[in-house]
Image (cartoon, rainbow, N blue to C red; front, side, top):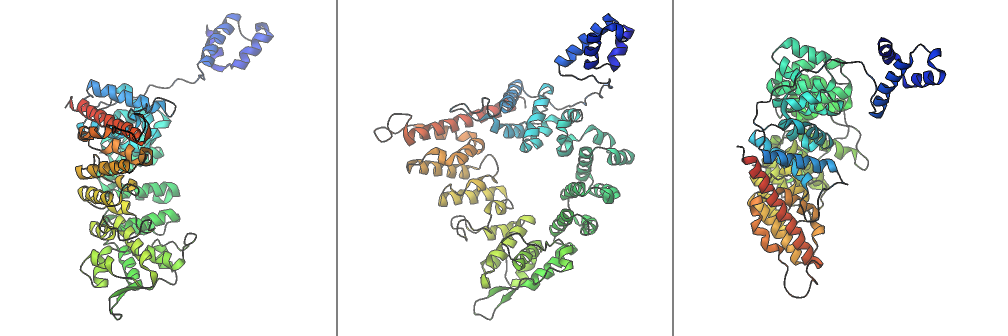
Length: 534
């Protein structure tokens, strides 16, 4: 036996084969030891397992004191994860049944609203699902809590969790050392990249100044791609206290790092960079009152000087774009929007937007204002640039106007109301991206506008697959309480015109509405299952 154990530590499968062919009398092994070793290696080969040195057991999983899921909700989560794991070749949507894989994100959101913890046996499936779909990560990691992060430290495929976890689910390494400067410093200096990102993110949410100071200790030694990732963590809790650090990053050797630092500073209207950009932008845009009607005149920059480049202005334009318009757009979008009312002699954003712009500069100027409104989260300017929903100020397809981004700066109720009015006036053909920025479940006016528009399309003789994207979104976003109100839309019209029941446009619409109603009722059931344990 001692000889067999010695062989098992140093002998490969090829060695065993050679020994068996040559004979044990020509190799230092007894027949018994050879057979014992061959049996062990045969099991390992069948299990696709390579021999490895023993490692110490991991530390015990941390406790999660949150309440467990109700049993019905637990079964539901297992089903949702199984459907996701089945993939395109699995079960998925069956005929008129709901697409369960698309219900997982809102199920996770609802479960987290109730404060539940994930079942331990479903954590691997939950981590796999979040690894495959980044949109699931916030909800999955919040539900998984500290035990999910404990697992992530044991499996390289789940390392993303250490970076993307919410502060409330910080990794054991972070939570254990968060209150000791020595522990934080050690983890920051010696941890894996994902652990360092998790540490910096968690610390930034709790103590922005401490996180910034920690980053400064190693900033000059970090790789450019790592500096960019670390710098991005400063978006959370961004304030003027970060300005000196960001000003220093404007001279970074990495171009993307410099651009990100300039973007962050321009989001602070009181920063020195914003003031410098404001002076440059005001030098390019003025109001001419000599032509009868006040008109905005533009004189774009003639060069991109060193100061502009230092402040994040990219000198080389993309293909097909003129240099001067490219530089002008960057200056205006980085300038605080508050400067324009005084500069143009108007009372508010709506009056500024309504002013005519000379020499064809209107698209460039308004496009830069749009980007500034989104970056600075300015609802007044977003509202003015959007214009009335029933009659958008620009023709469909205007390249500079992105209503979906502008809507993100408006309060949720106003956002939903604007999109409802847009759909009522223009239908669903241009509404898909707009619906994507509205809060779920959709407010009642928005839900009613979507259903009315679908019904109008049905009556016009269209087919539901022309609106498959909106129909799929309605399954996930309509209020489940509206299911009963849709029953009338599943009834096929009597008489000729669509052929046999189940055929023709009317039949397809009836099937589509049946699937929609079934999904809404399933969502209502899921909601009750989660509420049963509250």
